[in-house]
Amino acid sequence: MDLNTSLSIIAFTLLYYDYFLTIKKEVDLFWTFRSLRWVTVMFYLTRYFSILGSIPVMFGHFWLGHVATCMSLQTYHQYYALILQMFIGVLLLLRTYALYERNFKVLVLLVVVGLALVIFGIVVLAWGRNNIQFEATVIASHKIGCQLWLNQQDASCLALVWGGMLLFDFLVFSLTLYKALTLQRDGRVTLLSVLMRDGTVYFGVMAISIIANILTFMVGTVPR
Image (tube, rainbow, N blue to C red):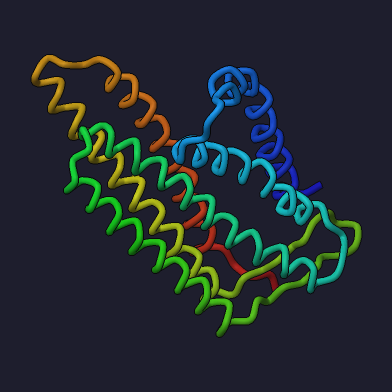
């Protein structure tokens, strides 16, 4: 079992362990609603798209099959990650909008930047898939999973997409930090202090993960 497979097992285990760890709170806080609001719908989309959408990704990590199947799973993984980040981005947008007491300028800023980065990501992925062929090989049959290798131009495209995600996270974090410091000067620190703490932890974890992805794409080499 190689390092990639071992890390994948850890990631999927944490994902589903976290789901079952919080399922009771979800039932108590969300499933008891008789009517669905669009914010609640966004919660369900984000939560269950990650849970159910990860199944094909997990399948690809342990698949022993043809190159074509592996390439299809890899393509699905790219677009799945982009769509999931869009859902998360909407939730972060709503959270920040609420922190600024429904400030229209903040909403416009977040929507414009978010849409620009989504369009940028789609264009980059579409351009990369249409003009660049993946150098994909399935390693010897005793190895587990689809071992797909990207050429440097492909990897640069994906690094740009992840860079856009990092930029939006940094914007949300900066706005949250500014609001927290402003209220602290006014002596008003209540719920925002908790949100600021959680936001800092979230941004730190996401920043490390995204930077690790970008570095992997930029400095990784294709086996010869």
